[in-house]
Amino acid sequence: MPFIESMRNFIRNAQDNKCQTMIYTEAGGYQPCASTESLEVDHLTPESQLLAEGSEDPNHTEGIVRCQKHHTGRGQQLQDDGFTEELSNYGEPEWSRHPDMGEARANYGKDQDSFRKAAAKHQEAVKRGERITNDDEGVTEYERERVQQMTHDYCIKNDIKPPDPKNHKRFEEHHWYDIFLGNRSHEEDEET
Ligand SMILES: [Zn+2]
Image (cartoon, rainbow, N blue to C red; front, top):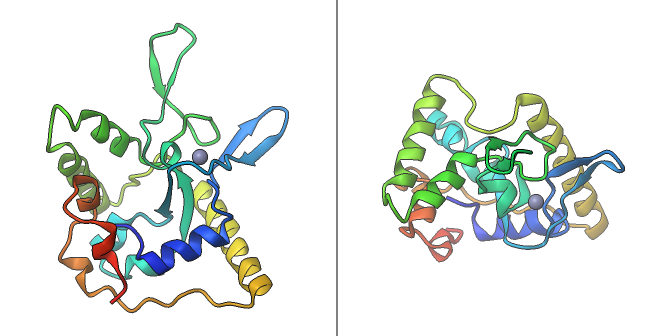
């Protein structure tokens, strides 16, 4: 499930309402994607991990703003031969943090269970202690530090504090992937 609305809006504003995924070019080095289209807020510690551990309300972790392509796109890039596709690495323009969710979305028309299957795989991987994101610990910690700094600067500049949502009582009663299946709307996600 996504962040509750107050948190999502805060994160989006603190991060300039732009995708913060870093894209590498030889001319400019690493620069934020900065897209303003189809923005989503990605949990830097994956939500399925937080829910499996039961240790933390997913609203209390760091979020990073990403465009849909970089959050839940397929993450595939066409190779020089013109028809083979390969999974992109962090820094490449087509990179996606959750390419399996992109794949599930692409297959949903044929297989209405595609999100459930992808989510079940996440949960199994989490139990085995494996990463479920298309990146590594170094990338995540780099992104975490960067967004923490942005939050800090945004709060100082505007003399505000981040919202402090109460624990989400319902977070165990719902599957986090329900939002993809239309079983849960953003309206249901209001702060309680
Ligand atoms: Zn992006």
